[in-house]
Image (cartoon, rainbow, N blue to C red; front, side):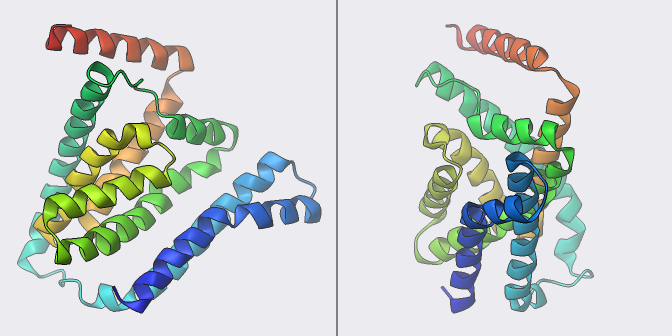
Length: 237
């Protein structure tokens, strides 16, 4: 792994934990609430982290195939196909988690993000746009890509998905993160373009945000119960 890749990972780690120091500083300097300080710093740190990461990744961007490359014609097709692949993988993994391991479908990470987004709508730029770019560069291009050159696809995808799940604080949903991670890794290997899993990741997160905003908590809970009932019917439980 090159030195600048380690700098990218270090930037991501600093970005994740910088709020511990700087959110209280914002609270002292400006007449805002603690919640607003956390939200504003999170938005700033993610955007600043993205700028730094993109700067560090400039040499890799120059190696990206040109727009006239034959592979570019398949970018849109694979992006659309990738969304469906990721959705089916997520649903299938969710069924196994609930029926085999008795793990609830709810994601505490997603619920926390949506609670913040409902209170401060500007925060949606982070999960919908900024985070997918950062996460695909780090977890797919750098971590998966580095492991893939030394092992095989399965091991590289599995280990990168494990790290991805642990970073999100939801190791109980390792299967779900792993399923999505395998899809993103496959898209990256198949197209040789990190842009494809970035687009798919953005699409999934954006649609999740739109659905969460358009439905009340009662509607979401009712839909989850109906989904569980359908899964029981299909599986025969």
